[in-house]
Length: 293
Image (tube, helix red, strand yellow):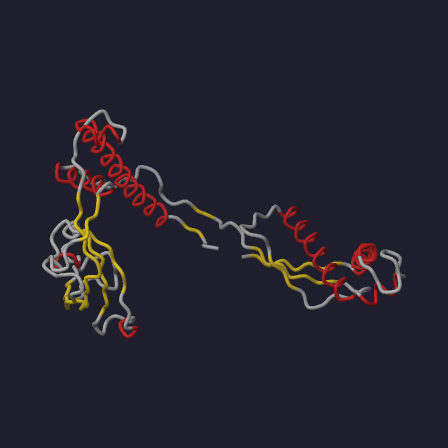
């Protein structure tokens, strides 16, 4: 951050006041006079505060830009400025604040190396992705009132956290979740414990989250939930055949499987490369010197 102290001489301030009052005089209508015909002394009396603001803004913008250009400064954002007062016939002082691009002293950025993860797409991964595509085209059939929740069903859940560790538990509010039962690979997912429940049924569920859980506030903790089945539907998947594949732009089932696997591989490869680049950048950043603006 850089502060500039700028002093504008009194004669320059006076010139700007005259220009601003002339501009105001031609724009405003004063009672008893046609637009632009009011005497200047009346305009100066009635519009003094407006003129003060406009003169200060014009002078500040002009002199700050001039200083930036002269000193070849490179602000990141538009400068801010402040002043105590402005008066005709007196010098005008401005204090401008600029956020500048930081000075960077590069560290070691050559011959760096990181370990890159390897990933192989399995048939299980491919089947999971194909099923997801089929689910997007699925039909939903309302199940009988007394039918239990089964793997593959679409369920609307109402979930409320009950344990004391949850800051929002006192709100006594349910939150809505839509899930396909049994689809999640997360062993701590709620759908692992709702099988067998019926529509309208409530159940207390306890979940122990792993230490590496992606939500930091839950990692390694045990949480208590009240779960209610709000809606229950059977998911009727379309048949995975050549007709289905052709309708989605493929030549057939084999082509769809092959290209779907290629797409998954591309996504995974991009993620792996991104992780590796991130590790390299971290090494560069940690070895360099710079001030964060």
